[in-house]
Length: 184
Image 1 (cartoon, helix red, strand yellow):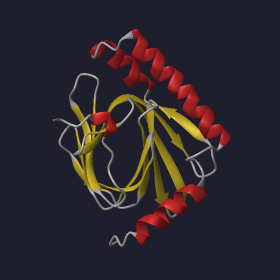
Image 2 (cartoon, helix red, strand yellow):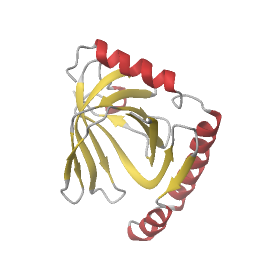
Image 3 (tube, helix red, strand yellow):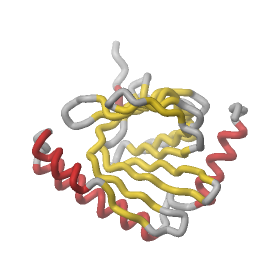
């Protein structure tokens, strides 16, 4: 009997893939490994560090900095907190709620992004791509409305400095990663 995908949960310490797609089903980007740091009813927290990333055009690159990633199953965005020498930068993708299917964390990327700087300031990115893809990939009006609503919700969370936009949260997860005995 096939286990219900929605009820599947990875365990802390598990290593999994991360796969993002576009609305038309094409692969957008993949990460070869992410170590699970926390799992709740609506959230998977993982770290990607020193892992291969493959872009849709086949370009490959290797991550050189740790990124604590927050994948929600009840929000239309995910958050990657990149730990850099100059501070913690957050890259937020407007995307479908994430699922874990036993092999990978998966979601559909909906183009719009929010980049948050260490001082709390932010910029909105990829507006033109979102508009172009609405036509190219035939986004339903309901999808467009949800993505716009979630973008506003995300910006409000950023402005308020709410979870996970807090250096202490990120540092605590990084310490947890180190305690798992991963080689850095």
